[in-house]
Length: 195
Image 1 (cartoon, rainbow, N blue to C red):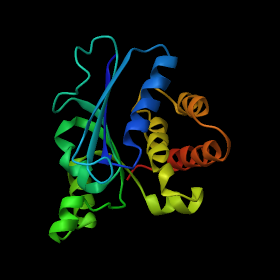
Image 2 (cartoon, rainbow, N blue to C red):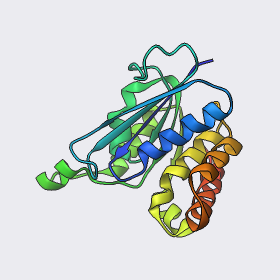
Image 3 (cartoon, rainbow, N blue to C red):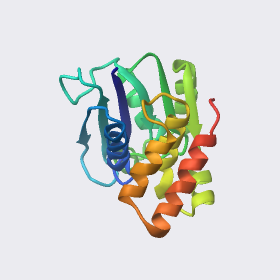
Image 4 (cartoon, rainbow, N blue to C red):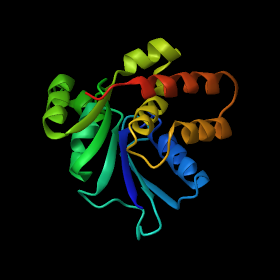
C-alpha cells in the first residue's frame, strides 16, 4: 500500500501541522510515514508545500510530479499551482477562500479566486470544496481550517486513515478549548459533500 498526500497553502494556515497529524495518525494505524515540507519566502504569507508519503516502498519523502493520490489545498491559487502533483484520477480537497499571496499583493496584481476554483473544477474529477469563512462561523476561528480539510479528506476515504485516527492524533496534540474547536472543524469537514 502506498498513499501520497500533498498539502499546499501559505504560511500561517497550519499546513505543516496538518501534514504531521496525517503522519501521526498513519503511524498509529501501523503504517510507515514520511513527511517533508518546502517553505517559501516567509513563514507567514509565503508558499508552503508539505509532502506526506505513507507506505514502506517510498524511497524519498518528496512526492514526484503526477503521483499524489490526494491534494489538500488551503487556498485556491496554491492548489492550482500544485495541481501538477496530482495523479490522473486523484482527489482534491480545497478551501475556496482566497489568501492573496504576498507578491501579488505587493504588485497590485488582481487575484480571481472564483476563476481559480472554476479551473480546479474543470481539471479535477474528484473535488471537495470547503469555505474557510463557514469554518470560522462554526468554530470561531479560521485557524481550524486545516483540520476541516483533513476531516473532508478522511471522510472521503482518500487517505489510508479515518476520522477516528485523525481525532486520536488531535487529542494527542491538543487540549481544552483548542481541542474542542478542532473537533468541531473535523466534524464540519467530514460533512462536506463532493463538489
